[in-house]
Amino acid sequence: MTDNDPPFASDAIVLFCHGARRPSWREPFERLRVELAQCSGRPVELAFLELMEPDLLTAIERLVDQGRSRLDIVPVFLAPGAHTREDLPALVDQASQRWPGIGLRVRDTLTEDADMRAAIIRWILTS
Image (cartoon, rainbow, N blue to C red; front, side):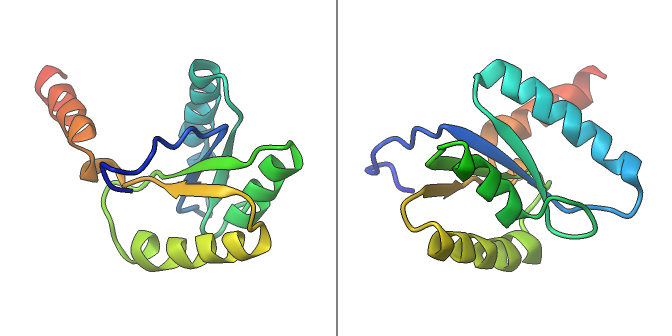
């Protein structure tokens, strides 16, 4: 998106996470999902790249089945890397082909956002 693009008004959010072997790894992301849904008033799904369910396409399908058509995909990764620069765009391309009528916006990773970096700095300095 550029500054000249119209605002993207999403009607649902997908938190895209890496995944892990240990089931308890999911717990903080589940808390984030619940709190974000409560604050935003929108459905929020978790999706995982590997080792956990659901995967991204399944999470998107759940939202599409609910009638959602403008989805924010938020990679809950600290910084960009192969998963967000290669794996995620390939998955988003698959979703766009499968559901051509829905809008998908992929957000930046956490430290790519100036406000998030400032929040991390405040947390470090005040903890």
